[in-house]
Amino acid sequence: MPNMLYEGDNLSVIEKYLEEGSIDLIYLDPPFNSQKHYSIRWNPSTSSSKDINNPAFLDKFFWDESSEEDLKELSSKPSLNKLIGSLKDTIGTGPLMAYLVMMAARLNVIHRILKDTGSLYLHCDPTACHYLKLILDAIFGFDKFRNSLVWKRTSAHSDKHGWGRIHDTILFYTKSDEYQWNKVFTEYSPQYIEKFYRYKDPKGRRFQADNLMAQGASSTGSSSLPWRGIDPTLKGNHWAIRRTFLHDPNIPEDSLEALDYLDSIGRIYWPKKGRIPRLKRYLDEMEGTAIQDMITDIPPISGTSKEKSGYPTQKPLRLLARIILASSKEGDLILDPFCGSGTALVAAQTLLRNWIGIDKSPLAIETAEKRLLKLGASFKKLN
Image (cartoon, rainbow, N blue to C red; front, side, top):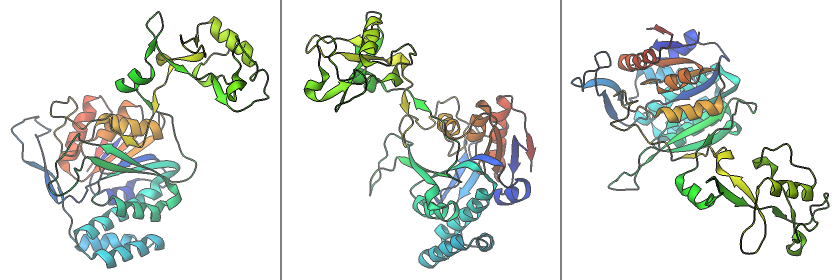
């Protein structure tokens, strides 16, 4: 059932309540095996800043009976079981292996509930991301790996004995080769605009002076004929109208007629020197930059941010919104099995997606619930 908040261990919740092939997009930001004890900054029930020592979760792992139980969960998948066995022989039964077995057991059942057209984003840090990728390769298939996203989570960090650690990794997999993907664009940076859109027309609209020619000879129509006394073939070029940027159905197919038309509506830029015409590409007509696998334009949650919940490890809403916009559509079902403060759920709610959140920390569930209620979200909660 969509719009559900479950308090409990995600492995048992998934096996008990979630159907095979029912989820469109899964984002998970699990513990990183950082060996830290995280506390929430205030009590979400009272919003009291005095309650600063409430334990949120312990990010430490030990090889114990639960590790052995998780290991049994993997016996049904031979390739994964073989990989985990090899890692266990290499690493031994310490904290890292306990963490990897815990993750492998959950990623295995997560794969089962994902739709064939679904996507998975696993948020991790350098501590174990290379091992987690091996596990995902064994579960999803190495050919279903799409991207390793880098999120610059802080501007600078001084590490005494190494390079400053300033990024997290987000591993992007799909269940099949047919998956939901939407074009998402980000705004151009001020530096990019100043460099590439440095011209302005009489009305103050910024534009870029783009090429009207392309290299090589062409036998298509009049594309190799002179226009306004300019012969493109003198330098081995031909006229090439880049209609993609113009969105104008009235542009003639014939190259010379198209040039006449563009000049008549003021879309040709004539430089003072050289007189080689160029196409005006206006900034306000551009969609922006397509999202890249290095995310540097989304800062972490600051101490004064309005979206700050006080929950440790909270991720920015913009980061989750970008992922959800790229890999789902309205009405899809989003799952976050380590939902923490509920940022993925808040983003899904805001973007008109359905959602399911799971966390075993009562404070995490309480924080997520508070944020969702503030949005006016309707949902059910089960312990």
